[in-house]
Image 1 (cartoon, one colour):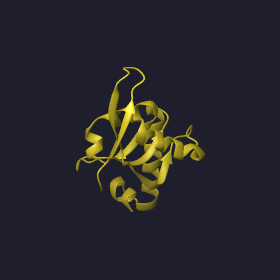
Image 2: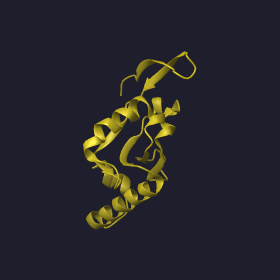
Image 3: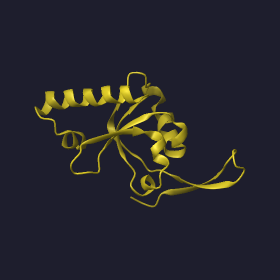
Image 4: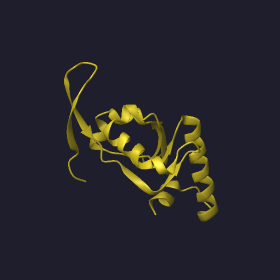
Length: 127
């Protein structure tokens, strides 16, 4: 992956210029969406996530970087942490809230069990 894109953002709250890193988020080709998420608004949601994560108001299901875990669920607001400019997440699902994100994970697990007869979500989602 190349260098993250650097944006200069003018803060309306403080009146000062703020250095903002645009994230290069990777998305699963078959992105799992929560019930209230509309597929036709997906491009707009992705742009918000990459440019202004604190305003996106969604929860993400991502592949875990830990070898001991498979998936993580967190608020997109976390993407403004500097860690994610260096290590952008691989998003496999987007939901409107945490409960909906759990339902998305449940659907992933059921689909994985049906197709592979195991629960190796990382391998299943990387294919």
